[in-house]
Image 1: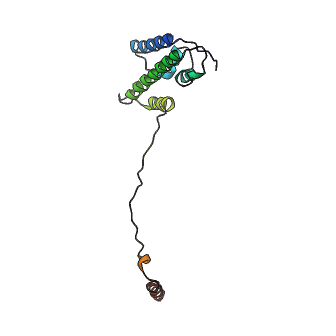
Image 2 (image 1 turned 180 degrees about the vertical axis):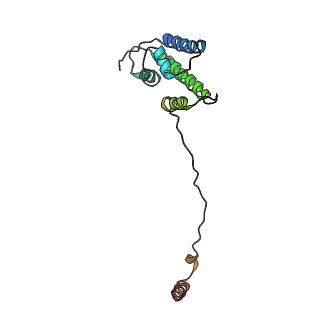
Image 3 (image 1 turned 60 degrees about the vertical axis):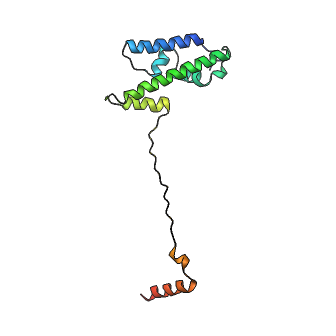
Length: 141
C-alpha cells in the first residue's frame, strides 16, 4: 500500500455523491464493487480509506476523518439499500451473499439452553444402613 492517498476529502465526498446519483438516475443497484469501480480503486482500497487512513502521509487529520466518514456513510448506504432488496420479492441470494461478504452479516441461531433443574438425589438423604438394605433387596429380586 502506498503511503499517499489519491483523493482529497472534497474529491471523495463529491465522487461518492456522484456514484449514488448515477445509480439513482440509471436504476443501478448500490454495491461496494460499483462504488470502488466508480472511484477507480479496489474494494481493498475502500477498506483502507475506511479503516487504515492513519497510514497515509499526505492527508491532514481533518481530511482523514472526512474521508473515513464519507466511506463509512457510503458503506452504510449500500448496506441499507441491499437490506431493502431482501424485501422486494426478487431472489435474495445475491443480496445475501453481498451482505455476508461486505458487511459481516451471518446466519445464526440462538439457542437458550439455560435450564433451572434442581436435581435432588434421593440416595443422598438415606443413611448407610438404608442404602445397604435397598441394595440387598435389589439382589434378592
